[in-house]
Every structure is written in C-alpha cells, then in structure tokens.
Image (cartoon, rainbow, N blue to C red; front, side):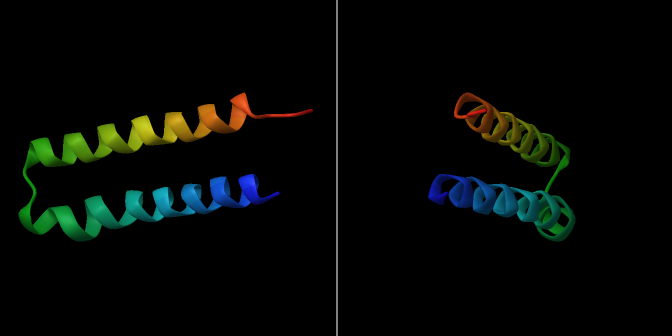
Length: 59
C-alpha cells in the first residue's frame, strides 16, 4: 500500500503545481513561452504518472 500512497501523494503535488504555477507564479513574470512550457511539462508528467499506475496495476 505504500506504493499507492506515494503515487497518490505525487498526484496531489502535481495537481497543486498545475494550479499554483500557471495562475499564481507565472502571470507576473512569465511570457507566453513560459506558459506553454509549464503546461507541456505538466502534461508529460501526468502521462508519466498514469503510465506508472497502469504498468503496476494488478487485478
């Protein structure tokens, strides 16, 4: 169960980062490319997190 807790914690941190970075940090100092890079990195990390969960899935 500790693997699931770690995965769930990482998912929570990723969700918080997805809210905090583009709406709290970037508007004051980020350009258009910064926003694109943040959302691209966020998407890649979400895909990696889901892939990790599916690869270790046990039915």
